[in-house]
Image: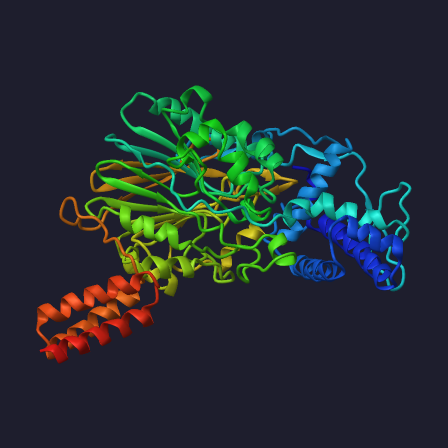
Length: 589
């Protein structure tokens, strides 16, 4: 990453400059200037699509202007896809044009920056600032009357006179975002089964390539070596988000070089990476076809035909661990501008499941075993000032009869490390019926300052969270930031131990989670062929019909009606069919 492109003010100036150039282009097009019309046509954009793009960019600029959580010196990783696209494009352009140089090397602060760690060991405060900076960062140019403020860069370009500048900028900065979403693979990865206890290394929002992000996986690597004695089955699981927009080069530069599993170990150690909203900002193409096709990941993420799948099941004799994709079902910029967006949540802040994942989970669920669910998105935020959730996913899981049987839910997305109180002690509406053990692990790669952390707005349902901003905390561009870290789960029959570690490998906190009362051995979740609401309504109608006809006839008729209606997957139709059949049965009697 490049220091200037993680600065909110710098990115905002670049966005304003881009907007001004597009507005100039639009004015020339409206005046039917042949040169500018030809340039627009060459890029495959219509005047209407250009207007849509300007409207979206205006909205993005307004969102970034309103941001108050990222002052000068803090790491700016926005939730707005267009702003992320600007960061990604500017980064690649600067590298291509060799406009970057090494930033100051990460160093350990002097002895006065040292303090005692959580377990009494000495802890240092390393730098985690970006490793690159611009050779000649541009300065804000004073805005002329009636113009948006831009940046002075020098060169032959004269604003308002070159039709290709705005379009070249769009192609370079937002090209990846113009792709429509990649096709979703409805088939799951092959189930990873073992008869050994599981050791799961979990970390989220890691894909920045910053020095401390690399330190996190270095510590995981050290623990992996210790766990390679064959006594457990280890799995390394990233909970999603590679920045800024999930482009191919971002996986190559910021994730793959730091992955803790070596090529020779790919059959012995599981490698998984969930889909995050930032992975989907460019349509998910590089997530599925670059990341998941890497030999070490496709070995585990491959379906029965070897194609990459974004959802999976890890299972031993006592536990099932479901990894689900809550990010695919958001629109890319291409969907929003060129096609129809799939939903309003353009930034992907809320989690959505596909029906196919829920049906598959219902078929695979063995209620004789404990259940851990992993996703990128959360059921609720840890801060009262934020309203991020996974309401649609929870609704589908409840309708399928799965939600109440989940023992633990662990997610990323929010750049904090939080363990929540047990269910009985929670007051937040969305968390009251969430699984007994809930935790957020989104602190593996994004620097969070005290202002971003928002300690004053945390909800009362938090049992413990990483909150150190003392002399042991890392330094980013001169400011203390939350220590990066990860967690390890060690399973045993009926329980698991959840241990949080920081970037140095120091243990921060440990929790023991016990699963709910086990169902009879061998019991599996019911395979549902129609919506649960339809099934429930059908049963209720069949019960009424049984009063008028023989119980045997009515029940048989109801089942037949439900089965027939299942193909239509409509609750209303199912109820209507049952009523009709029951009426006929009554007449025969």
